[in-house]
Image (cartoon, rainbow, N blue to C red; front, top):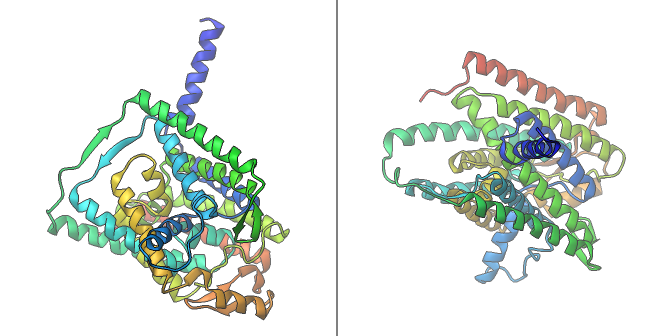
Length: 418
């Protein structure tokens, strides 16, 4: 075999590994943790709710609800994260030959409407979706992550109970799903064009001399170039690994499979170590991703969000990367996720409870507790735990989860009967 043939074979093998194969969930989780630390150090932690809420805000503003225009979708960091995430997932799906227009049965379309709406309500009550309310919450050392974690478990179990009931009692709209495939050559071209578009967008941001208003005040627009590319890398990774956090809460009680739960636990361990270093050294502010929902808001939000996510077939990020691979049910869910979050936020300020966060500051940052509308603002390192104790607590919690789901997989004790 000639040297050129060997080189070509190795290039094809690398392409297969990077663009076609399903990635190992543990490796996927580790990459997600790494990218989450990098984007936090670059500008902000990421999530899905900020994006869809901004898009929902624009819908309501367009029909005359609200006097002030929302943030520009190309200048709002949450929206840019959402755009980059979906685009990255689209690139992955196209390069891997996974993109197709998947039309679900009528019942699944209806469920997309209700599921997305519930996810929007739950995300506002719980301080974010499964990312902002749980993953990046604990990663950023905020106690509200524990509250939503408890709620997500309950919500997923309730949704499973409903799903079993639905299977036995509802026959309407079960059939008729269709898939419209896109030729592999067309997918490859679309994937390359999307990748070029992402690079061009980042380049446009990087060469701008303008500023945008973000969570830290006025910031150079160049910052959003990095945000866009890092969000795209996250979307690519999620789709390539088919990594969906709601599976971590659903599968242990449905089939007993604990692989996703353990990969999420591992990812969180790596994330919390990285963010602890950033916050302890003053690179990221203590109040970053602190939400005043350690209490009833976090738990109830988790229940509602978890129930909706199981019905949707994807968590906050799971819906976004599935949008990028052409799943129409999740397109519907994302639309109503945004509308539900936007509408709920007009009545409940929830995670950005301004009076609560001001009270937290006025109390002095060494005092960790301050009541908000939906619970307390609790930054764990400012309690008796300190940074070391907080790190030990979260690592122990993840270790306990790992052991519990592994035990459950072997014994099937926690699997719900149909």
